[in-house]
Structures are given as C-alpha cells and as structure tokens.
Amino acid sequence: MFEITSIILAAGEGKRMKSALPKVLHPVCGRPAIDYSVQLAQKLGSKKILTVVSKLKSDLVLQHLKNFKDLKIVFQSSPMGTGHAVQSCVTSLNGSKGYVLILYGDVPLIQEKTLKQFLNLVSLEKATLGLITTVTQEPQGYGRIVRDSSAKVLRIVEEKEASQTEKQIQEINTGIYAVKTDWLLQTLKKLKPHPVSGEYYLTDIVEAAIQNREPMVSMTCNGLGEFLGINTRKQLSEAIELMKDRLIEKWMTEGVTFIDPRHVYIDSDVTIGQECVIHPQVYLQGKTEIGKNCVIECGAVLKDMVVGDNVHIKPYCVLEESIIESEAQIGPFARLRPGSQVGKKARVGNFVELKKTKLGAGAKANHLSYLGDADIGAETNVGCGTITCNYDGVKKHPTKIGKKVFVGSDVQFVAPVKVGDGAYIGAGSTITEDVPSGALAIARQRQVNKKGWAKKKNSKS
Ligand code: UD1
Ligand code: CA
Image (cartoon, rainbow, N blue to C red; front, side, top):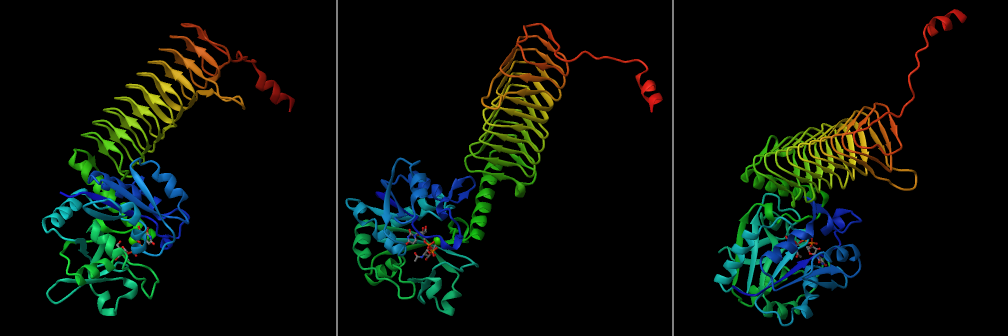
C-alpha cells in the first residue's frame, strides 16, 4: 500500500465535558481515550504520528504523551477548529509521501480491521480523498453528509449550520479521512473560517475535492458504535460501555464464562485465562493478569494483580498490585495491599489485610488479621486476630516468621522481630523478642483465679 502519516487531533477545548481534565485523558476502560488512537496509528504502520495539542492548555496531555516514544507533538496556537489544527501540521508534513490519515483523540472505539478495509478501498480507488461515514438514528451533534440525487457526496454540514431539512439526515461524518498528502497541503491553504463559529473546518476539504473533481471515495458503515465521539460525559459513559462489551465478548470467545456480563467491568489491558468464571459485579482493573480456571466471585476488585491458575477469589475482596500463586484461596472480604504475595495453596480469609507481605506456600491467615511488612514461611498458620505492629510512629519494621510456625489467636508481633521454623506462639502473646526455632513463646500475664471473690464482693454491698 502507501506510506501513511497519521494525525491525531487532540487540541480541542472539550468544553462540553465541563472538566478540569483534558477530554482526551478521560479514561475509557482504564486507558486515556487518546491512547486508543495512538495505538491504532502504530498498528497501521504509520511512518509518522503527529499529535496536535493545544498550546494554551496542554501540560497534562504532553506529560501523558511522553509515554509514547514515536510521537511527534504539534502545537496548535489556539483552538480555531479542526481545519486549523491540521494546518498546524504543515511544516511537520513536509517530506511526507503517500496519505495522511486523520484520527481523533476523542474517538477511541475504531477498530484496526475497519481502518484497514478503508485504507484498502482508498488505495484500490486511487482516491485523492477517502472518508468514512456512518448511518445513525442519533445524528445530533455530528456533521451531516449531504448527497445529491445520484447519491454523490456534495459536502458536510455541521450541526450548528445545518438547516432543519439537513438536520434530518442520518448519515454522519465520522471525521476519519485518508487524504493524499500533497493535495492536502495545497488545500489547507485555501480553508476559510466559517461565519457562524469563526472556526476553520477540516470538513471543507470534502467540498474542495468535489470542486476540483478529485477522485473521492466514501465508505459507509452502520451505527455509531466505532465512531462515537466523546464530547460529553454521557458520550463518555456510552464509549466505556461499548468498549467494555467488546472486551467481554473477546474474553468469552477465549473461553471465559461471565455469569452476568452486563455487570462486570474490565479494563483494556487485563488478560483472563481459559475456563475462568467471573461472577457479577467484578471489576478487573489496570494490567491485571488472571491465570486459567480461576473463580472470581461477586464484588471482587482487582487492580494490577497477577493471579495464577486455579485460584478462588471469594466475594468482596479488594486486591491491588500483588501476586496470588496457583490454587490459593482468598476472601471473602480480604484485602491485599500493594507488594503482597500469596503462595501456592495459601489461604487468606475474611477481614485479613496484607501489606507488602509474603505468605508462603500453604500458609494460612484465615480470620481478622493485619500482616504488614511480614515474610511468613510455608505452611505457617496465623491465628485469628493476629497483627504485626510494624510501625513505631516513625518507621516501618519487618516481621519474619519461619516455616510451619503455629501462631495462636490474638498475637501481636512488635517488629522488628523474627520467629524461627516450627515455633509455637501462645494465644494472646505480645511478641517483642525473637523466638528460636521449635520454641514455644508465651508472652502474657499468667491467669489468677481468686476463689469465692464474687461472693465476698456481693456481701460487702
Ligand atoms: C467533528 C467534525 C464533524 C464530525 C465529528 C465526528 C469538523 C468541523 N467537524 O466535529 O463533522 O461529525 O467531528 O466526531 O471537523 N480539535 C483540535 N483543535 C481544534 C478543534 C478540535 O485539535 O481547534 C480536535 C478535538 O480535540 C477533537 C477533534 O479535533 O479531538 C474534533 O473536534 P470536536 O470539536 O470534537 O469536533 P466535533 O464537533 O465533534
Ligand atoms: Ca468530537
């Protein structure tokens, strides 16, 4: 095919979002909206990717775009319309051959296969300009495609300038164009501001191509789906829903069961192994990776987690930036804070919180515990109500507990402290000194039973 330079427009003010966050940074399934367009441009093998950002309000966008190495940033002096935004790219386009593909930072749902089909069509027809249109029952807000009686495209009219009859048109401009670079460079010079808005419209290149009798091709799709633009919070929620449905469908195709797919949320970078069963109200966020054959029950929230195979996560767990090895069981109501690791076949039960804590293979902390900055050996049992006192008010300190240790209920480990393999800790102990391997440590007051005490007390009163 031909050489492609992609231009991603992202300098608009996004006024309709009513947001302090630039609209292209609003997340859609865990990624800022603009990332989808950048990644698409990359996948299509663009020779160059130019991203147009506002000179006035671009700090956050610029900072974010640093995550992508191969982008060229172009500044638009002020938001004077889509035509003006592309005009800002003229210098950067010098020397580019082939075609310019126009994409948008606020249109994240377009699929690679659709654009490939479109670019093939443009190439086949040797068109100077190709555009994608789509037919929708909700054309409000979009530019309408005006065709003549023989169905040839005449021009694009924006909602603001459309007559009542034109507003009835259901075929809209997706805003995606592939344009021969040299022709675009000439045509951009001729754009004039529109009297109503004072903006330069990129859509005017369509009329220019017609007047010039340039070969043109339009690909008409069905429905807004892939082309939904995010201009309002409502459209943002629609885009999120569409993206989420697409992701869930993909994972179903890969062999994952969703009991109630409408009420599960999955971010774009999540991966899920075959035979997993995902219950309602589960939220899988960030770069979470889930192995095969896991069950994730109702209300679990996982963020940037790595989960092995055959893991069972019971209802209402909140798990973040941690590792769960295969066959482990978590919850219900468990909390893993960043930097934790639950070993193979280990168990973390209800109301147990781990922070930067490693629980060895087969170890158990089944009830009501806080374990922070701790390293707990394989097959150790942590009794109900046990806590690590890891913070002295200034610094955090580690607790190291060996293998096959039995920790009775309601024990406090005042860190830093170490317990050797196979030791026993009596219930209710406050452990302030290291415990050697195989020892029994008891650190509590001896019980005193005062016989007949109650009777004496009662006789006094
Ligand atoms: C634009 C099209 C409309 C189309 C719709 C599809 C024009 C005039 N209108 O309208 O026909 O149906 O997209 O979604 O092109 N931008 C800049 N600089 C600016 C103005 C905008 O970079 O000065 C960027 C925005 O960040 C955004 C994109 O261009 O990513 C589109 O701008 P927006 O104002 O959202 O245009 P629409 O009204 O949606
Ligand atoms: Ca838009």
